[in-house]
Image 1 (cartoon, helix red, strand yellow):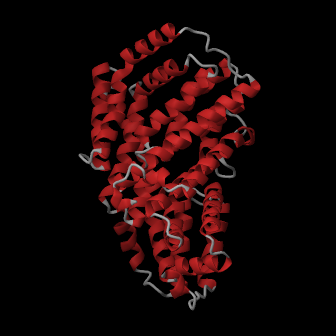
Image 2 (cartoon, rainbow, N blue to C red):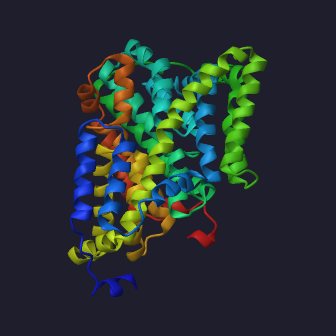
Image 3 (spheres, helix red, strand yellow):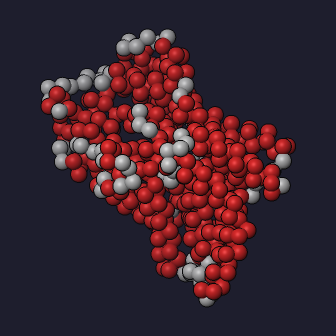
Length: 443
């Protein structure tokens, strides 16, 4: 076992490791783009250690992103952009509102549901926060919610962007660890829904305590009529997530093929409805390219860094150091979750995945954790970081939309973080939560 081989093994990490890490932290603190800071750290680590020729960095950059699976990333991003421009996202909101209008706090619950619906198509947190925020925040305020809380609700709901499949984060971690993205999508479905339910429950509890929103005074006949009217006027919007889920989960489509099909279907619906014109394409493509242009350089520069860490024996050294402190699997799982939560607070998901996954996976293997369960736990824990300072990407998105203080939004997001952490712990300690839908070979 790995534990036995590590008993007599230590990794001497000198300045060739610590100096690049310090340099990376300093550059990030100076607001240097993350991909550039990672590139400088990787280059300096390889140069100082001499373990790998510096000339191989260029080749590594291109080899790392020359993967068919990554083609799905821009396709899902483009699908989300087309979804907004065609008005289909508004149809999702109408149906979600019709579903929840019978209950007190119905529009708040509808906001969370539409975040989940959007997540089932775009795979991006920031895109979901921006799209849903534009539609719902002002109406949430009109319904009685304080603006900071309304912003926190949208930011929390949008966290499902990387947690409900299809998810860009699962595509990336699958690429890094050599695991099928389709398998990860299947495993993530129940945990993703569990996170969505935790946010719904949190909003219901907060609404009961503070009486933010009234409503819910209608007969079942009225509710059924409203729901039928909403579905009849917007049923076609569900063709897109339906194609994605059926194609991937049935095995008929790869995530990349599902993304391409979703783009085509969404565009066709837009043309049929008359809400999309050829003149809209340049703006859509430019917007999607900008988002994709943020993600891919981070992946490209993170892979040489991950290689450098592996060559220097950092993952093995980490396992040895941690298991020397504690050998109880329950304690080690809690420690991994704490590391992931802390990392998600200070750095974006993509570099966290590429850097931390190869370091933490050997520890998960050592305690006998299923690799699929580990991936789902990692992505879910990192997802909490989207609403936690100082980075909190979703906090910045909704703050930019409304002008509301990030600190005020973050303060209102605390209950959502608490309930989401409960789900993260459940994923870490209950393997069935992430393996129930998988074939026996993965359990």
